[in-house]
Length: 273
Image 1 (tube, rainbow, N blue to C red):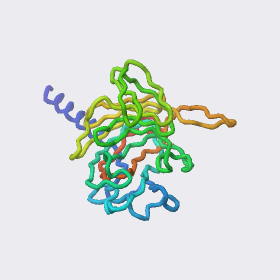
Image 2: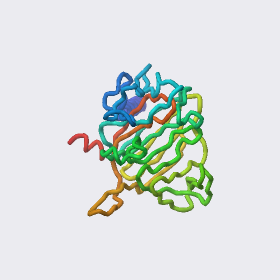
Image 3: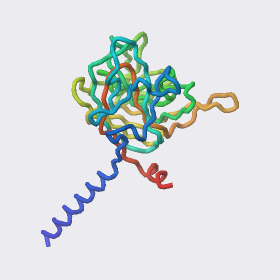
Image 4: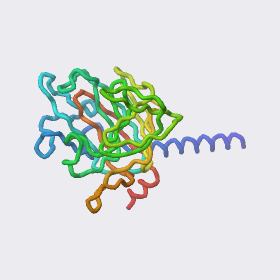
């Protein structure tokens, strides 16, 4: 009897494990850019004639064949579908090349969630869709950017200089609520990224809330995400609960792989419709 119970338990555990694995859906097939759309600033129709975005050795490879002798453009690659409630995970690795105008700065890219603005004339710097950004930059992975959006997080009483202005610092415990305005940035509280190895980024997105992790460590949380909507000539802020998933092309060679998503109940229901 005990043996049968043990066998049944092992069977159930293995079944749950298999079921859990089936929930993870590849967003990138490792062969081509099926399911993704590419936009490059200052290119006709935002297309990618210079092949900034390539697939090589199973990786999305940004700026693979680009020359460091000349200035290279910025851009974005994003899913064709929108998502609202999901878990996302992927890996990234820095290449060695840096390009003007960022050739003397930290290597930089970024994960954009809830990208939703179809009118590209409203995109920031004509390159970044309106969204919430989890910064992926050397030593700064997890910093939060409001790309034409507004949101809240918990910050400490500390402020640090970043560039020419002080920036709020995220606090896991939180001492006060910070309501971001357009262009504001919240700094992560400590470094989790590796500069010369693959890094794992995870995001848990539930409508207007999100949590971000780097190499298994909690880094940042954001909630009450909002987008600007013009009604009768007035800008009002409405909940931002869905959008596309995007990665930035921002002057540094970088590779992405194993990009996959696990849909939560709301998106599973929407997928069946």
